[in-house]
Length: 310
Image (tube, rainbow, N blue to C red; front, side):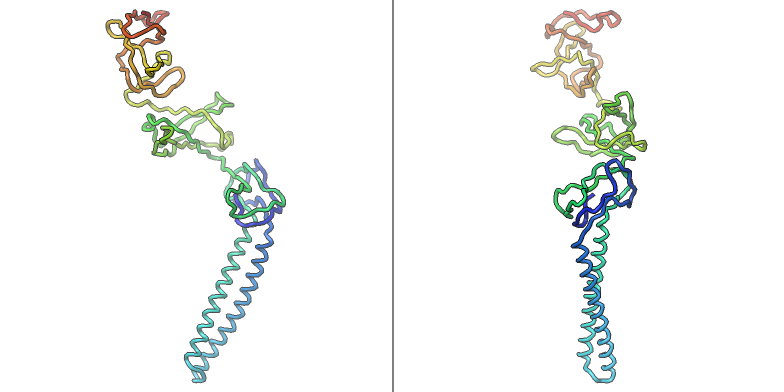
């Protein structure tokens, strides 16, 4: 919250961690210059009201004199014009009093909604300059009953996300506890630099277990793109030629197949292209394995099911 008027902080009534209600006074400012402007505006309005009353009496008097042909119509019209002009000035002075009175009300900083004070920079006696660029807010209030969780997801998974998708996340300090979140909107655009799309989840935080600004580990249950496969990370061969896997043909010979890698999930790797469901892939290829090697495939129910030897 920033101040709408300039002045000195005379009191602050809420501190960090305090729960505040909408309309509750957080701080009080002293604005002597504003008080003087308001007093002058009220005096100007009283003067304008007196001038208007005199002009109205004159206009009515000239109206009656015109009926007796004691004055000309031109003189009567001039008196009516003077009254209209003075009446407009009086209404302008009244509006100025209302404006300054409203500004005077801003010397009390009030909470705009129910929430928790997360930051306070207001200090007793400090000068507050209204409208100063880059000024630090006197108070920061957060409504922590519901929090927004922002996640950047890869472009390849953006099509799988829609409103209502549920995700789970955990705090680094509480890795075993899973908290639910619901997808409420997506950016519908991929950021060019990172190749990701920003999505927003809504989290129920009525128990105030979570704190704004925290980082969490998120798991979103989405399926991969059509034609993708999940392979053990040990199958991947990385080199100057890029990522490859060792595929065994029906004759038992090795073919080094280039692949396109998607998400790295630790123990598994998402393969976007380069393999099919019928391919036999070497689980842990040794460094000596090269294109065209003859290998013997070990059956999956044997202790060495994860190796293919040349």
